[in-house]
Length: 371
Picture: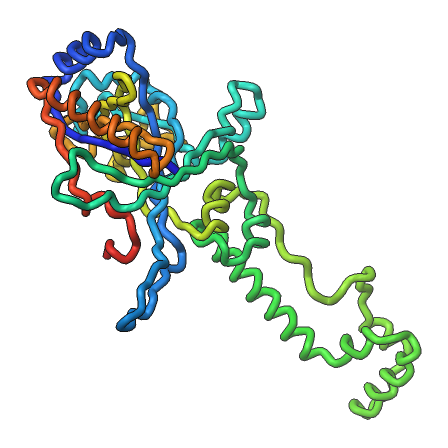
């Protein structure tokens, strides 16, 4: 848990080179750290809806959770954010490899860098502190980091999970078909009285033969009875379910989130640079989202496991975030020191960009506040 103090701003693409050069001179960092993060926004599967009563205070809150990891460079070359990005540029699309696919397991096993293992950061953030005299935004953030190894999930494994996974519809349809086949087999067997009786002990064979003779009023020999009996090979009459060697689109991390009680509702990519000034972290980045309208066609650079990205803001505007993380929310001295540093930086870079306090209502991730 950390207390994050932050100020935000934005600059047009034309001011990017001037801003980077000035920050290099201010911080003394000639090569800023590259930022490439991929984030999933998840929501609880079962929303808690308390019954509000007079005189009763509800203290149970549910939040959206953000899962963040790194993502690789585009398959068609290095992405230079210093150049403007156009969403309608079909000759140079921004293609990235799918994270949740069945190919990364083979690539990681072949020893090409172990791309199947990733570090995820799970983050839940509270609404920032309210107040008219706030110098910066103060928000409590809860984080947990885990190392996860991505593996593909077979359809058989997904069937064992039952309805826990509601992402792959094809797997659920296969399960329903199997259940219908089992019902049909049971109905057919229930309509055959001879087979049912012959499933008993061997001592009942004579009584079964007498019942058949009495019902049909005919002389039926033991040979006729043995013809009707079919070998069961020591197994039950139910036919074994059909096995499918096809791997589903489910990923073990998605199943982990589902077992944790969350489902994915959105995703986005961030690409930018990061500077360090005293205890302040300065990030300049662009936000990308998935382009579902992109038609890969017959291009040689496109594969089934690649997707195209597009800018969230088509004006190529850069987002700027300056923040300080304080380890403890009760450490008033560090909070006051971080607030003063942000105020000095705000005054120092006012000719480059104007740092402001973000609207706290836009940073509220509670389930009840968002409809």
